[in-house]
Image 1: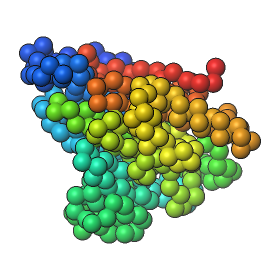
Image 2 (image 1 turned 90 degrees about the horizontal axis):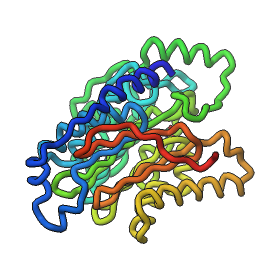
Image 3 (image 1 turned 180 degrees about the horizontal axis):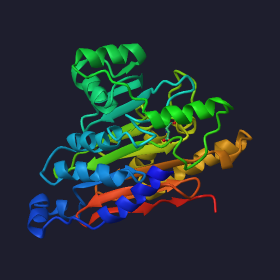
Length: 330
Ligand code: ASP
């Protein structure tokens, strides 16, 4: 909670907008159909999205590729030891092991993913290496670590003292009960449209705190935690991964946009589907939070979640701001 509050404070400061000069903006929008496109633009989940967007924007404002922007962006919370739900400093599984999940997707539908990866601070960069340097799309566990080391990534201890202390406290009861909107989970999902009009996305997390060893959520799964279709749009998810996987959430959001829905309508429909399934399976909706963010080719965006409390950061020509997502359960 403390780190989240700090982020809110930092977020408010960072919200003081950086705006593209109109000259620069014209350079980005030089064809008449392009004029209607809001680009570049980057969206990312939760408070830490503000700082992550700053890093992504540095790439985007210099006409960089969306792929480079999302990788640079999500590396910010990945590398922050005070951030308890992503990368270095992330909460461990119930055995005290920090296991990380990440995936990345570009405008050509190239994909790369790692899951249950230990000891590597930046799983998103390993996911990108899987995408660019192997014939595969997903590596897990020891295999992912072995590959990372072969690529020159450094083996590190990711369990910071504060996390270890909390985990030891948790062990006393050993009760797995993720609390919604509290940082025993939270993922950074980031989607961006660059000045060339191309989309990419990245998603990275330490997953649910105190999960069973080997548990994967939606975040490393292309189609669940992240999906990009350069003709249509991009979407990413956060919250209870099991529920996102159940509906192939991010892919669903993109497909709904393909059918003509706005990013907002698409996020809402995907959330409603989770709610309906939760009820029909007689599960308690109060225990489940899921949030989606989405972006289409025009640079329009949307976000929606089950319960209040989910927010996301948006950076475009009008600046970087933190926005509370609308929600279903009133
Ligand atoms: N979706 C992540 C997972 O299930 C956690 C989160 O975003 O809160 O591992």
